[in-house]
Image (tube, rainbow, N blue to C red):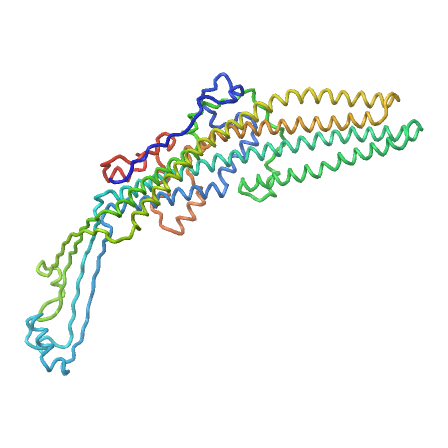
Length: 530
């Protein structure tokens, strides 16, 4: 076959993670594929299951696999004769007996030459004939044009599977991120409400002291102002939480009205003490988007060979086989089945493009430039994968450190508020001291909850960046029964809707996106599992 054979492009991969301090002692161990189960949150697990079953975008990615499989089947068919047809005809003719055509001898001479009849009177005015033919033409895949196209379509098919896996990883990550955000908002609302109760008590104390003549009205107005500002935060938090719930409902493939029934009472998932991230080189195998970029590059590489064949001569075979009969000169229409009435034709030829004014050469250049773009996209996807993992590890590690300091700050702020209120009641401090303590307590507690949520979000981002989660599809089809029924009711899909006929038995991550070996037989090309 002409054209370059694909080789996995060289890419820069670090040996160890920069934020290795965030990893466990088994930092090179296998990544937890169902990582969300480590949070021990049944609600989160159920939400991910619902999203996997119902998300329309994921189902769309599954349909794309079926489409690419059909395109591959079409390309495989080009290895066989590209044009095959059966034709037939039944002719009924009437020739008038008294016309200039029959009287001047033209018709008699023509019929005599064709049928042996001396005149029209010998056969009558009516002529009936029939014929059938089977024709076929085949452009021989001498230079590998069709095999390269199969190679390209096969890699596009594998890229579609990787794209589905990437959509599944993103879906799981988005569901987890939204769920953590909702739990964070719930905790922030709870803390704000607790501070409102404290500030209401402070307002009551300030009011009582003012009414007793122990302080001025300034303390009351300051307490009321602080309480109202804190209460105003609740609607903002509830608005943000509702919008996040709406986004989660979209991921689950359902209207927002039903999301609250799925969110049973819960808390922000606990922050793990360490993570297992494997080694950076594993990203080339685990990350679906990296695999997708690799398969896409392999497909573009094969198309270079397809364009090169257009510069070379093409060789073809053609032939036809059929028979004809009529009722002229005593013949019978049933004679069509006699071997004497058989017609056979066979031919071969070649076509060589000339004077194409650079069009074909530039088509090769376009294909090569497209392939080079795919290589650069692959290399960039490898770098981007490492960046995302490092960002996730950094958010987790430094967020956990920050949580330790904020936890101590929360304890101190609560104690400071209690002491400030006691001193105010005893007349040893003015209300400004209480006001400052209340503000500090709310700010520190809110910071702690926010940091806890962002740290868990860092864990989610890390596992998402590691490509964890696509294994959920193992043992399952990429299409729901409902979608398959809709498609089968509309179109004859044959046996293609059976998972074994549109999904490979060998997972794409367990094999590189290499070119199809030379001299691979037809039955091997048709096997999607090799």
